[in-house]
Length: 294
Length: 235
Image: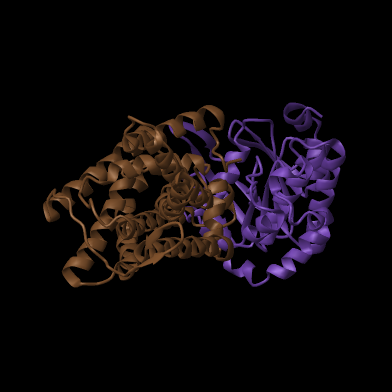
């Protein structure tokens, strides 16, 4: 029955939406703090996917352990790219930082290809499943969702209760204002970029817990697109907005897929992929500040 | 307390400050007067390090601080009430004030500081959970001053605190400034276009034109010299 199918798929959509949310928070944070659109965003997700794959296949470690490893590796990459490249580009014209982040993405793709080759890979983390009346959900997806909620809560705590987190929000709102309050704005730039990349790499692990196949050096591009749509949906500079927008996007994507599949003679998958473009188009037309933006 | 010697700075290829020198005595209100666009704001921003000094020297409590980054200067107890407010409009009043107390010495005294600014500006206490962006212009100006005080500064630089305010509020702002000197013992460097009001508040006055100090003196000197008043202040 269509209704049951829809509810089932929406459940999966909500779980995936949590992962999308975490996969976009980093993009929003970096844009919010240093005004740079990270065009290489998806490639950092790819790095996370390979962290999970390698730890699982080579070391036999569960992806849950790969989550903190990905955060640390991501933050290290973030600091590295910040101090070597981004720091010089903060006041440069947008095109310069677009090119630089695009180049970072290519660099990561080619390094990944050098190490892992271009084949599609996957892993099988069998941790059982739960059967609900309407649908069956693999436990790995539930863990991915729980992981994303925990990360979002951590970030909420970080932004609202800690001194550095509040300073980050202050820099997003008005960096000159933060400077006169005594905030070391240069350090906040570096830290935010590192946390943003850390979150993004971490989301790559969560994503493979959800979709453990198709891991490949060139998998990142489509996630960059999705993250852009979700970020705009969430109001661009707000990491919280990004998380909720991720949930909404997961629901819309899966709901639309289910409905498209009901139309005779229509291939639902490509249509769903194009949906992100349509959403971006209408959103920019109707409410360019984002659904959750001001 | 603050001594600036032959300061030079600017933006890109354009030099704005042409070696002005100035001194702010401890406990005094020193006013830097001059019309729009002569470099007064640039002067304050250069002292605080938001704009990089090209030349000259800045001493604070007899230590040279010319090239210290802004956050270290704030750590030493220099606060700025910036032109254009630069509030965190999406945060509430309380959060803005907490950000003002960002420097380490200020965090430990945050409750005392809150008490002080709430007694100076009771309206801010009433609205402490309201978003800063929804306050009126006058209240925002009060919040900007309050935020600077939260840092427990030894010296506050105020950049056009009366700008854009209704005349009655201008009076209030200057009353507050005098109160801060008398009751808190704060040292202040006041940048203004409003010559009459700042002559009333200040102890010592510098007049800036084209990035240079053209005249200086005690408030009485400036008031007494019709040449200076006519040439530079138009009053």
